[in-house]
Image (cartoon, rainbow, N blue to C red; front, side, top):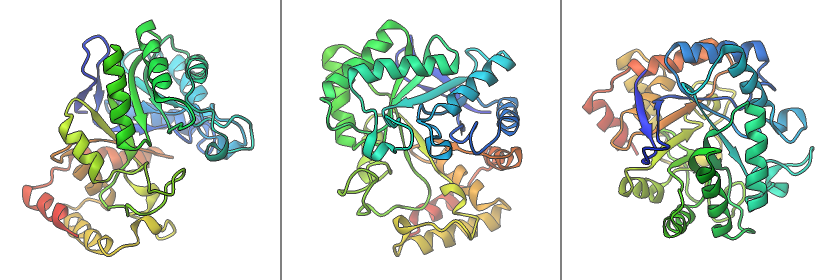
Length: 328
């Protein structure tokens, strides 16, 4: 599998596979045997970039989360996995109590929480250092400088490698990076947001904001990434949870606009020409664009993963890509 470098500091940057595997439902909805089989197949194919969070998947088992990290810890130990696989995790959106959700009861991003939650994730994963740690969601109740210093201290201490941020307004990402630079601290270098071929409406409320969806890629974030080529974009939910290929998975209100039908038509045309699935064309489009991203795919079976892996061999022509890009 092709590789790319994430991070700019020679002391912490890592080489990872261009396709990342999401472990969100491993250990809850996806049982351990199946999860191990998917992980083994991913590594066999050359995959080296796995994603989880300290709150996965609390909504499946009524807990605060942690099952995914624990399963990955058991898998690592049983397979003798060490530094060859980069495991990214997140903190900040873990519910404070079982039976509650992160929207109304998130642990947040205070210095105390950042340190305690990072330590708990290390224990669940069975590692001395977290390869990549994200601030999962915004915490407007905590001064941004406090969060920036807390994350930076973990890198300086050697218990965290790279830093990332997810589901934040782009202006808060820029402000946090400026605060880190002025303080001489490591800053966010990997950005994880919802991104796919279909365009989301910018006016749809987000999960914690009536101003819009801060968890999705829009023009301002694309522009920000173009101006900062040292940053890496990881695109979660690129296949919309089956929305491209399953009639029982409606796209939802975010895609209820006039631009969706023309883009689906272009997608179908390219799929017919290449003999690929819709999903594979979407992944190929993300991987080979002017602004390349790392698609983060989920899989509840080896067969699902194999479909995504096959997209790595799909090369879109310049004409096909131009047609996909211009559909609106």
